[in-house]
Length: 258
Image (cartoon, rainbow, N blue to C red):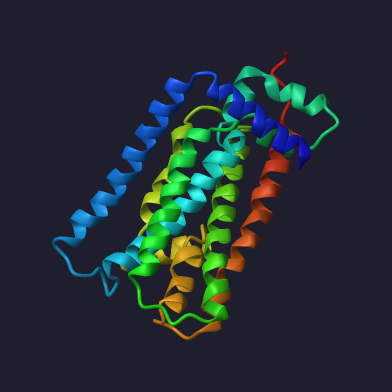
């Protein structure tokens, strides 16, 4: 952890060497994020609800998924850009060092500009909760925390799976965007508004529904099932195939000859 925190400090100092560029990039990310937010507002000017979900209920769903994605873009950027390690040959050096390869990959890169999205997602989360009539109890507090935690975990698992893909081919990496950026845009709405095929896929293959749909139903009082409240914890199981695939890829890695 000490090494990781030190690497974050180094990346931050590097980015702040070009303060004007950092500030402009920070502001641009704010505008990009709010373009998603205003798209939702525009949608609800035509519809009062989407399959029973009101504006602030959808915004709550939106903020949770954006929180997890931006958290990983900030703190796990090295995994998201893992293809650069393979293409440049830098991954060979990581294998020679007496530290965890995964930890070194995490330390490889960071993007503090993405902190703007993380802050904005927290703001939208707070605003949406303040506009909802929530019957607060200890289980609903834990459910909200579980949703935020599982959102971070699922995107880390997806980034790790995408990194594993780089061991087999570094071409056609746009395929992974279907599950990262594409999955993020889809999961910012309650999964139940889509067709049954989508609900099945994003429950049993990539469990977005366990992040911000089933627990959301419990949190909003639309269901009393405690199974829904604890469903975000099932996302931890998604890390098993992600880590296994990453380790399998490392065993198949044969160096770039650097």
